Length: 611
Image (cartoon, rainbow, N blue to C red; front, side, top):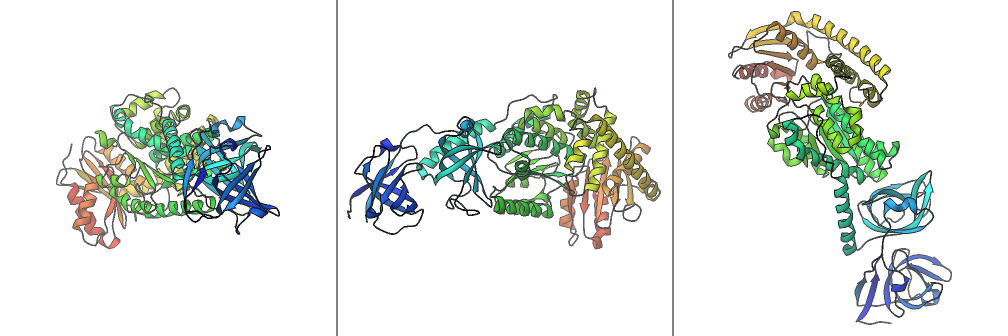
């Protein structure tokens, strides 16, 4: 049977048996074979039989063919005949039908349902293929089985909008759809479903407009940017997109990251995630440098790509906290952008404008007239409340710990300290911050999740918290005291062109190496002593190593990122890089150019005005 002007109908996923017309021709997909004929689907859930006497050609499972509806029996069986047509026109039949939503599946156990969903993850097990499905109401898993370990519906890819039919079951106390049919929706239907899901998810993901824990002009100005970051993170959780949180490995960075970690993991659990789900959807990783090093991005991409291949996961969002705002981050950002990763930054280091072209959102007090005194830990705690408001009771003291740990002199410091003074004194907060710094030094690149929770009292075990912090502070202070006794006799003093006092110490040969405190903290402790000894005078301290220098300043209005850029341009072959805050930071260089770089650095410091 051939014709050049035949009309062929394509049944939409919402169509039912009553929408099929006897005598018309329809598109169908081969579902399986029997001795007596071929079974086909006319849409996602309507099944018919082509008797062997009416099969005109050979097929394999999944082939698209054309069928003529010969009869619809009283029991609902459809008799079909294969039709071979060379030229034809396709007319889509769109039927409106109330689809089941994932959020309603708990009321549908034991029933067959039809769903229009987005595929958020595809995981092949030794048995069925597990598809993680999302819509505007939630996410659930569907299981499809062809044969053990074989991928079901290989044409379905991550991010596809599909129509699914199957029975709702309980497996290991969790809802699961036993998928009997799944097809990728045609473009017109796909866009309708996608638009519906996206709008609802956006509404769900937009954070509640909460007041901050304290009054702060800087925070109020940052609220729109913070809401944008919270929105992206919440939507990532709702859509099963992994999040990698990178943070500076000091007390301020740890506090910022753990605040957000607690909020994200709590939201994942509220969405039905278990510990295994949580470990795949969220990872926190400390960074030794105050910027995103190539080593870090390489590890993150390796982790993400393996999970993408092994578990069918989406590529992650990268969230940077207490780092990420400077041009030192850009080589890593360029690498991340090869894989189209979304990058978010919540930081209080002095930002470089060029960095923003790589970022989807950027929270930084310098953008609204503030400075580093509004610490990353303050920003992180307030952001965590936007992501998951109930988290506040656990992290209320975190900003005060960050404030004293990062030596903030902003008005927000005292406000956060007053907020928790009934439970945590200023000395308590200082001890917690020192304990974090001490323990993170020994943790190296590990997140130390459970130990850090005890130090910050996230588990609400006050006895263990106090014992642990007391022990770590005692050990840390003993190590600091020994380091200072070793180093202080070797501090050299000079006066700079701007009349500021310059103190230098070679921390490579006059300090214990590979132990706590590291060079940065050693330099800071020496600087504190020198500031007390020279009260009211501008003081700069340089802790110098073979290929680095740590800079600490009081009373000199310097700009460390600017000096780094100038020295990099001026000293050819110096290999200069680094950064940090305006008056606290570090600089790196090649060892053979140490004297040249240090001389140039000191000359530049001497030209800055003093307070």
